[in-house]
Image (cartoon, rainbow, N blue to C red):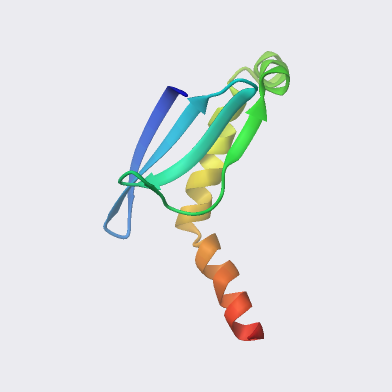
Length: 89
């Protein structure tokens, strides 16, 4: 696993880091607090799609995955999802 990019950010007093890693089939993006995943989601894009995106849009596809990952933290998507399950119980 090669780290392609690190994006630190702070939200509600917690220090997060988004890591973009290069894998055999493409890129993966994940949010961490310390060395632990901040949520269960892994965002990914294969190399072919990434190259097509770069050619069409002019920037790596993983940049948009970074924004999605950060948005999920800031908009508390995990907490929202978990609260829906708790209401059904």
